[in-house]
Length: 124
Image 1 (tube, rainbow, N blue to C red):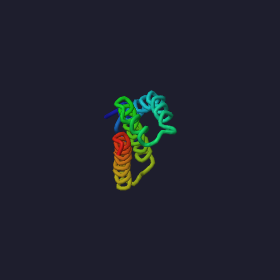
Image 2 (image 1 turned 60 degrees about the vertical axis):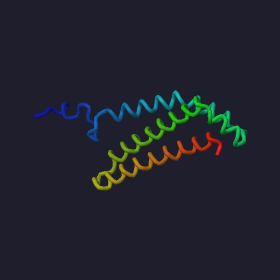
Image 3 (image 1 turned 90 degrees about the horizontal axis):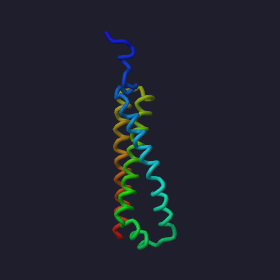
Image 4 (image 1 turned 135 degrees about the vertical axis):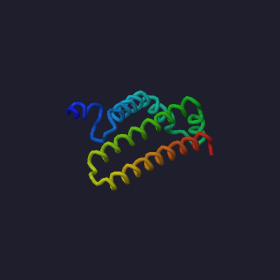
């Protein structure tokens, strides 16, 4: 027999514990730290032609900053939507389909963003 505290300790309504909570906070902190460099890159791109943009985006530090921001933001988006789906969708089949669609969508957004950055940085 378990006490009510033992039943809820480290477990939310999705029964995955507090790991999603901490991952979402971690990605939020990462995005907060990366937003200033990302905005600086965007400001540097204003008024540049394609060759100038490719030169800026082809820089290794810029590419790393943008890739880290893309990964952090899509991971943050995935976790947030998954929590909403798990909390508010009550039909188990619809919940499973929605979580799967969310995972695929977030992966597709991340891959499309990374492809666009790599395509621009290569100058093609």
